[in-house]
Amino acid sequence: MSASETRLPTFHRIQTWGVILRIALEERLVYRGDFALGTLMRFLPIVTQIFLWHAVFDSIASSDDPNGEKTIGGFGFTDMVAYYLITMIARAFSSMPGLASGIAQQIREGEIKRYMVQPIDLIGFLMLQRIAHKLAYYTIAIFPFAFVFFLCRGYFTEGWPSAPVLLAFAGSLIMGFLIGFFLEATIGMIGFWFLEVSSLLFIYMLFSFFLSGHMFPLTLLPPQIEQVVQWLPLKYLAYFPAAVFLGKIPEDELAGEMAIEAAWLVFFIILCRFMYSRGVRRYSGFGG
Image 1 (cartoon, rainbow, N blue to C red):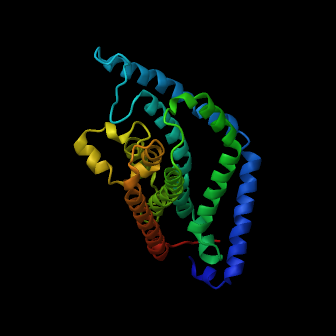
Image 2 (cartoon, helix red, strand yellow):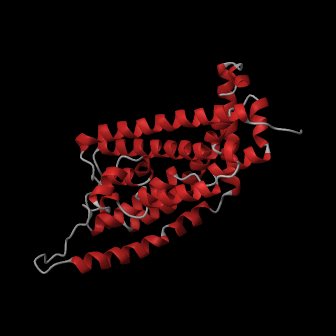
Image 3 (cartoon, rainbow, N blue to C red):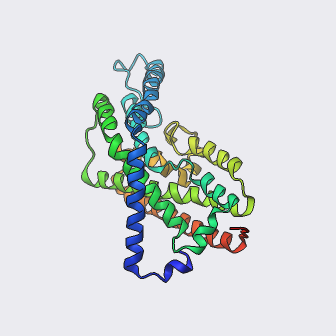
């Protein structure tokens, strides 16, 4: 939080953040009317995944298993399809397109100066913008999501999880959103030192695609690699919420897993704030 912002009374700060959130939400609801169709189109790759994994499980079905019910990494065919559907929700929460590159661009072009002279905190402002984006997205996209999940309801053979699991699932989505935000914001803060972060961001996105569970469940990795990946924060962006919802994590282990996710969240909040404060100290801006 900037020094100028701390001088504002608490009520006025809350009122300011409320106005920012309202305006950001209104803007997104007006100019992003394509959310519904765009969301529906994002589910089209699921059709390819269904055919792909059906062929994979069909090929490993043995003659001593007349029903062809096989599992890979603890996932059967229906589980695998349900997994990809849930990861679509998880990634919609945790993905932050343009955040890191946008921060680096503001630093490079000098727009960062306005947060130093006005009573607005950069990180808080960007957070409110992302919250508005997600609220607008799900307000409009909930109908395509409901339609697709209704068509694919047969793949959720276990039915709805228990109340504690649903609560943990909701918590994992919220913390996944926050981890995704502060992780990418931290990458953007590197712009104070290097100005351009596109190459670093490309490397991050490459690792995130594979190690978050977005491409496939992490339990399909070789055991030695999986043990390492399971301790990384990337799994909370896609794999973990889906695994929680599908009951792949025992309920007696949920509290411990959620605590680890919360610890990673606190780590990235502190790291992001530290990078910002150190970056501002070394920043030099010229002109009007």
